[in-house]
Image 1 (cartoon, one colour):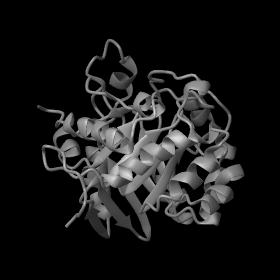
Image 2 (image 1 turned 60 degrees about the horizontal axis):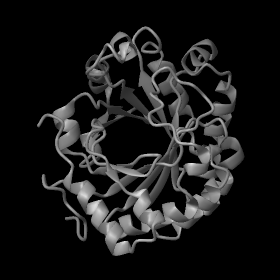
Image 3 (image 1 turned 180 degrees about the vertical axis):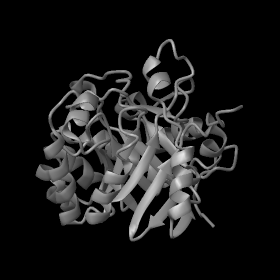
Length: 309
């Protein structure tokens, strides 16, 4: 039973906070929306991120994930991790594309980072360049292996599956992950409701149901996570695959325990919505008390609603 955790009005506990600390990036992936670009000088500072995380800890958040854009583009990223780690969360993780990870992995581990998820959709050089518009595949692979070496465990690879691009590369990616003691996460591309605005998602969306059924048939064991949208983890001959299907809205939302902070400092109560954001960073910059900032968090939590309502 969770104690000292805030529940939203649908009795979902808020135990995880994902903070987009920059939306700058060193690749240009096909499926990235680049929402709400924020100038680097306007990004949240290490001290501001510390204050946000300190208040989040007070309301029961136990896990912090730092993401981007590419978070390793923040010049003070090690200091950011160090300050957040001083708050003694159960878990501090980061999502990165891995390109700069070889350089930073050891320092991040020493600063208090527990683990990393690396976005890598292919091991094929040509496909990588098609997806990212860059030639950084070998840098990303070196970063991944360095993360394994220094113990940022478990290292996970996030592989977004796209029709006619990489859906036939899953076996090769799983082989790479199993060999290097890495968890593979297969992620279903979110299909936009407005396909006139997002023709890419309509053209390349690939439903993961058939792939998951194949995985389930050969798995030695399966575990369904209690939180994190009820994701299923499959264990196959010493390897591990997790399937993330955000388009399964009812189940995804019903077991969501995560709140998000946008790069411009707003609370994003729901992953699949942008119409209920709550301004946060201006309250921090105005020097408001932790109690006042906590009230802003509670306001954001009270905005949470299942997608299908």
